[in-house]
Image (tube, one colour):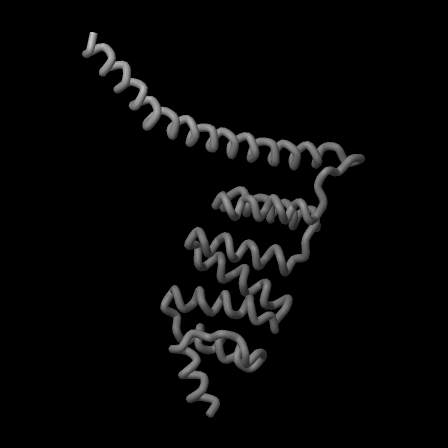
Length: 174
């Protein structure tokens, strides 16, 4: 009798400490899955019903941000390519976002290509120049990074440049 009560209490404690957290984790995963399914369903249904477009350019950006947050790089790239095809976003934005995605996937050559295309459209965008320079720094291409940081310094003297390069720029220009 005493042994049965102990086993029953052990079972209750086990279920409270193991099964309830497991159930909550599974619930969160199911909610994320259904949210992603719902967003994708709305997005693709809006493409087929041209009279009632649920999504506009801003919702495409929200969907893109959702893919970025969930680190679904392939879906983000597909959405950007589709937006480029439909001409729903500016080319400069598409190229810079594509460069960011490919950089996160460590495809540095493709990322460099898209950064250079975006920079060709807006050559004085210090944030694009800074992103490309930091990628060059990651790739240990210090000469290219230094030349870009010099361009950034010429456009915006308040831009935060890494200490290693800022000392070289000050010595070069001074």
